[in-house]
Image (cartoon, rainbow, N blue to C red):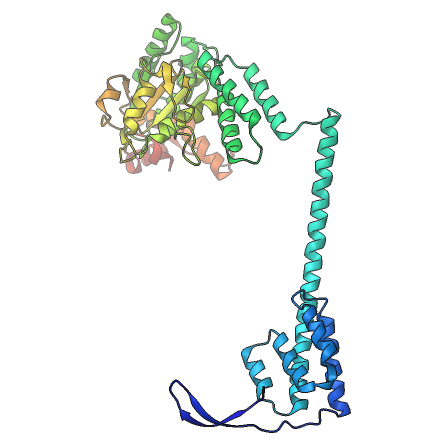
Length: 456
């Protein structure tokens, strides 16, 4: 092959025709200077050989065959080895002086050598780090194996199975739940720890064994004690307190509080949520609250089926796990704002939970095992009666109409003012408020039925 220079374009469309000339290459191939450049190029290529695995035995053969005796061919070949830009290679191509071309190629080779050395350093550091990590991993695996042989440690699966068995031993499982757990434990023992089914089954067993099967707190139905708690936490609302005491008295006569659903209905800020907490304290039960306002997916009530990726149980199963008791007080806030969508009707799902005739066999889609919710006391709150009639028919309604000015003054002095001082980081003796100032705020700025704006 020879270099040529285009002198004239005869045809500028395909097929292209041009008139060319073949300039003579300047420089003596057999001069000492050219020979020195050739040796420098060869040595640089030899330095590249061990750093880049892409350079094969054929390259060594080429160097041994041609060497410094064919400097022009050697230079062109050396340029083709580099990863230089098209512009840099074009400059080499256009250099007709042999010395000038060899200088350009030598610069490109030196750059290639620097990059190759840098890549080699990076590769060595990565390999060293990887080998350290692999060494640590193998040592840890050997340590686990030795500890297992000596009976000093267990593998992950065995440890998890033992943890599940310890939980099961503390539970009073119904026959159906026990059978399902035994089946899942056997299945879990046969699965490989790296499989996706292993994780799904472990999570399922975790939920089944963490629920409070047969775990109940002892009710403390003391009407005088209950009245003291209600009076301590709430000023006014005497008619509401009387209704709650009547409700508790009926439960005391029956010997249990099961099968009842309270509906506290009234404007915002009248203390519906705090009354629910007081009832739970009076009974000595655990308390859990969540809002169903705006809920549109029935899976939030009854959970997702385990066939779905990322499936989880519903709100009530989460509540039972949190309180660690099968007879808590569960409050459903804003039940009048529950909705419906293409994902189902949460109100219909709530019916199975709240209805005393059905909730003894509540079935969460994720658990797929029936759980007895009949011992749970449900308290619902709402601002008005826009509640599905099927739910409303099963509830015992207690109205909270609001507070008069005298009751608001008492609430402000006993409850709101200490809370405001605490939030501001002040002590009682640092700032006081008169009854007249409280009345002025109530009559001028907080005339609503509740006390939420009064606190603000």
